[in-house]
Length: 118
Image (tube, rainbow, N blue to C red; front, side, top):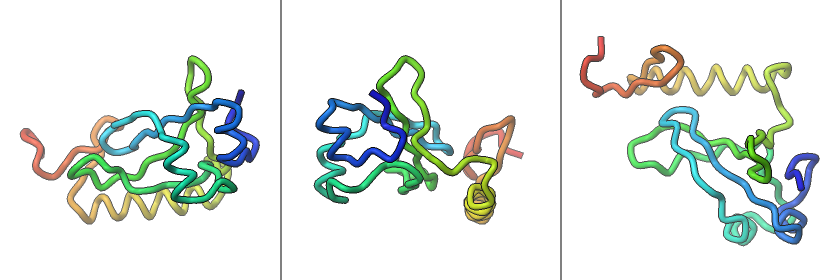
């Protein structure tokens, strides 16, 4: 069962769906407790297009949610690189990370205090 297509948390839970979170900064990831999320957001909420802060200590990143019901997890977002909203969000996040001293190196974010940093 796919989590995409606007399924509510109630529908996903009823069908035994699974989801994962993934941070774009620290590359952390893990399973999502859908029951706990439903208790916090309500059963009519979805995980698509949500970007909460990463809970890894010291990480200023935001996480995205993935459908974890198949071998290759798929993003739950409906906003993609083809949408202006995606570019606006991406530019704002990049500016905030740069202001905190983080820098991009070879496609990964580097913390301000990492050794060997230029």
